[in-house]
Image 1 (tube, rainbow, N blue to C red):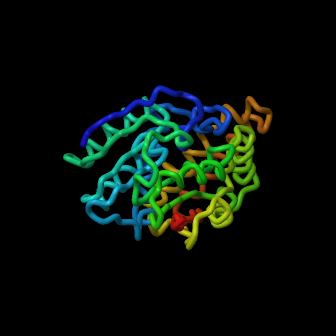
Image 2 (image 1 turned 90 degrees about the horizontal axis):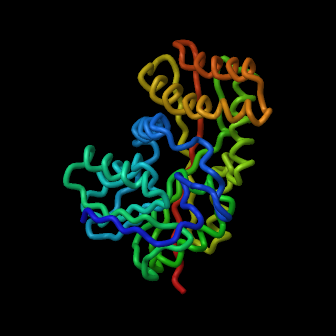
Length: 293
């Protein structure tokens, strides 16, 4: 089912490609081709870690909320080949990239593409059996309201899976005050845009507060060191360091850092990918149920 539906409203945004507005912060990492590649590298490097344990049965109706450029969609589809997957995002440009990515990576995959705002989804009540939300809530000014809104389209007894990071969980060797400062500036920029780069630690209270039941949260820790150079390159450099490095101009423009200080912080992150360096970072994966009634 290769369809694309466009809703007539613009308004607020949905998650990973948030465009600003009253209910969402701006997407601090931007929308460049470089960022799209980084998202793909990130998804591939973390596929087993984040998608492990997530497989939806054939015939089940699955909605990916805030699919962005489809980096996670390809793994969602490949692990649940018989599921009826719908992928929604507020950005039509991102949806076009997502559609192309899935077509190239998963030939023949059946995905319905919907251009819509997560606060005003064009679906019937109780339409889906499962919702999948990855790296979306961190970019919203009101994740509680978003989670409440999503319950409408999830059938009673259906499941919600949410995955988020927490930049406060990053530890590296050699330790570096400059690197920690650069990471902190990214957190501050995201907060200034209305988001929360530390949201992983509060997934359970968020979901419980939005009315979901049976909430379980599991930490998913990524650790890279010199014994696994491919992982150090894929995660430490191409995923985490690239994410931090990408907001350097904004950090300097905002007066959070000088160019020299920023360059030292980024150099220290690169240093963590060398044979005697390490980087540890924790993601959080929550699974919850929409209770009956």
